[in-house]
Amino acid sequence: MSDNSEKDQGLLNEKALAEKQTLKYAKDLALTYQEEKARRKDLEAAHEKMRAVVDSMTDGMLAVDNAFTIIEANRVAGQFLKANPTDLLGANLFKIMDFPELKERLFRMKETSRSNDSVELKMPSPSRQALRISISTLSGNEGYVFVLHDITSEKRAANLKNEFLAILSHELRTPLNGILGFSELLSDDLAETLEEEHAEYLQMIMDSGNRMTNTVEELLKFVQLDSEEPESLDEKVLIDRVFEQLLPSLRAEGDQKGIALTLESKIESPAVPGSESMLKDLFHHIIENAVVFGEQGGRVFVQLEDKGEHYEISVADDGIGIPADQLEKVFDSFYQVEEYMTRTHEGLGLGLTLAKHIAELHGGSIRLESEPGRGTTCFVMLPKDMGDNNNEAQ
Image 1 (tube, rainbow, N blue to C red):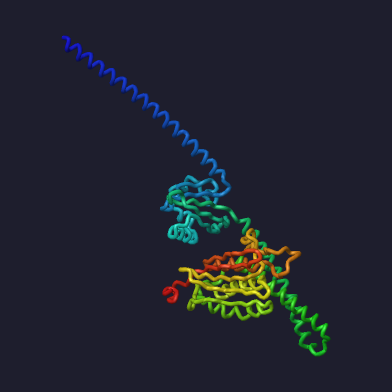
Image 2 (image 1 turned 90 degrees about the vertical axis):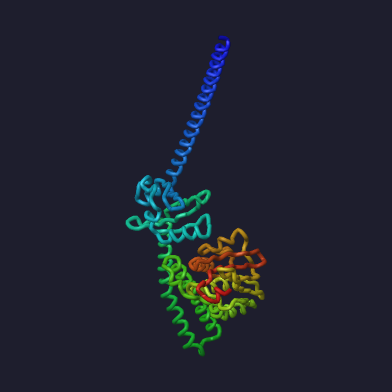
């Protein structure tokens, strides 16, 4: 009897302990549930805040995974794409935005492991909006984020500016042609009868007219490059041939200042894809710039180097140099380092702007290194013509 009582008591104790543990587990589970519920609530609140921030953006925003499936879209992106943002989710990006330039940029980013890039696109009718799309990779390379910025007004203003410059240039051309034409006639017909002083005045008129003509031509080139479709960039351009054609006249300019212009290249028949006439303009601008701002009696050194898939062309002078805070500004349209009222060199400040534009059209780049009083070096990088046997062997 005593043994049975002890057994019963033991069972009761085990039961009580089990109930106590069950109650504890239940309390722990309830606490975990409450904590998880609170955490989920906080996450939902944070998501709602983020959603509100994204939707309040004045720019459009899209996010895609690595299969280019849209996983996020804000209100403005929906407006740009003429769709409800929720209807965009799950759609393939290229079915919504079927632009070859965008595909090319994305696949290039994927191949080169670049983390950001940008591209400008024009939306189809009826909106015809111009968009600048900034592309960034998601954390962990799990996809891409696109920020869509409306640049329609900027493009319209730029087009108006270019139209104005084109009209101005054409209107200036006509009277300039008359001035130069009649000046040359007077110079030829009266060469033997004009007094020396009057002949000098006539030559000054012709020189000023020629400078004005060069300015007008530079304006027209700027307008054409900035607003028109570029000419064919499929030529095989031999860089050494470009220099052969350019250097004689540029050396003549250098001789007037006692500047020695030298070229160094150990590469046989370096070729790049592009437009020979545009590349002539590019190198003419940067070499002439070096001559104009070079030191009297100094030197300008042009060097061509092989950099793997690119050629690097450097143009170094020992002139006045450029302050560090102005190195990027010199590529802006009409910008000049010297103040207008005190500057000693002529020009519109478009040479480096045109050079940069041409380099970028050819898939290349341009940059400057400079130190005031020590000179400036301009570096141009251009992709090789990879179909050329000489380049493949190098």
